[in-house]
Length: 159
Ligand code: 4NP
Image (cartoon, protein in one colour):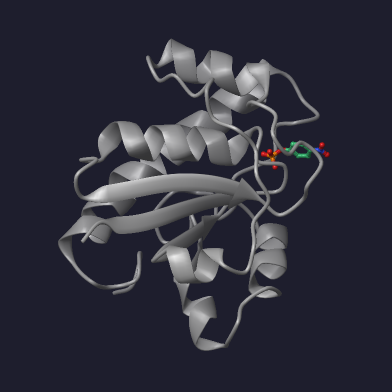
């Protein structure tokens, strides 16, 4: 059975499309299914922000065909791991949990990875350098996360 991972941010046009593309590029697609969603519905149906597309392209990852969708309660049933970019996402995703037990699926992507950040900074209102920085953080986090996700039934970052 595939491990199903959902990456979540606010808009689903900057950070979580990068996280989806990066994790997918590292994972064996026969073992891992990756998707992304946003807690807000501002950009539903649109492609990722051109700045995210550009930084991914620089790393030979094509995210241009992704389409924005909103996080929904059903995602708790469809996914094993829901990895959020920041604490605001965490609160908004947990607010839709069908039970307390389901909230255990939700984690901050960067937390417990040894990186000096626990949140992926939102680059939307800044310049291209913010996209490069968040790309780098997500990339490093995925390197730590992927073996944990695929080698055990533990929650990511669980000791
Ligand atoms: P994201 O960034 O959550 O990383 O996709 C944002 C994208 C859009 C908006 C905010 C953050 N917005 O306000 O439209």
